[in-house]
Length: 110
Image (cartoon, rainbow, N blue to C red):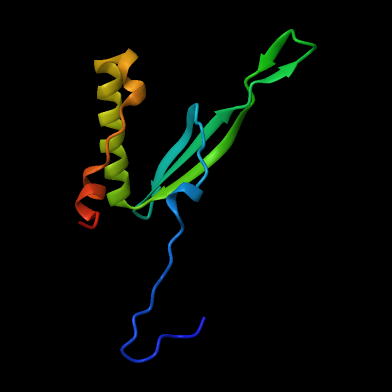
């Protein structure tokens, strides 16, 4: 890609949100903070069958590692607190609740 000419706007194309994979998580495997960066390792159970149907091995594997700046850590905390409150408030009715994050609404173009 050639650089923009004088008085020309350069457009940066971002990845479309729907192109990002979804990961189901069963367990927070590790967490920490190093040099102001929050780190979270999330795990998923594979539920691998073993011994001819006599049981399953939960088979916990790392499915995602998050590295977050301080703002993202606070936003994630707020989002999880909101989700927990909704789940405890009406456990059977929370399947259809999807609310945009306030920062996304504020940043959305009119």
